[in-house]
Length: 71
Image 1 (cartoon, rainbow, N blue to C red):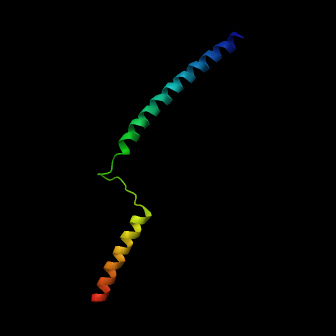
Image 2: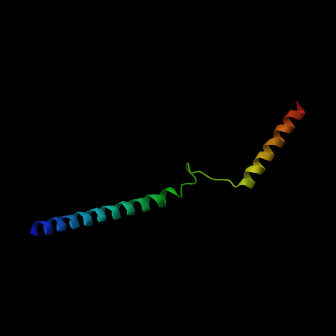
Image 3: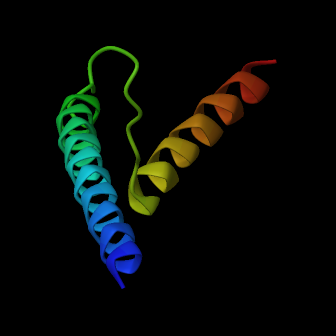
């Protein structure tokens, strides 16, 4: 029985250490996530709505039609 008690104690210690590491990793991920989501100006991606894409496409079609009409 004493051997089993020692094993259980060791497993609990390992679990506590693992939990502390997970908490540190979570904190690091939260810090990095906060930094990466605010990068609009330098290389961040912007998503357009479907309506905005339609307006841009219509404007481009109008430009092409104007060029083709002139030619």
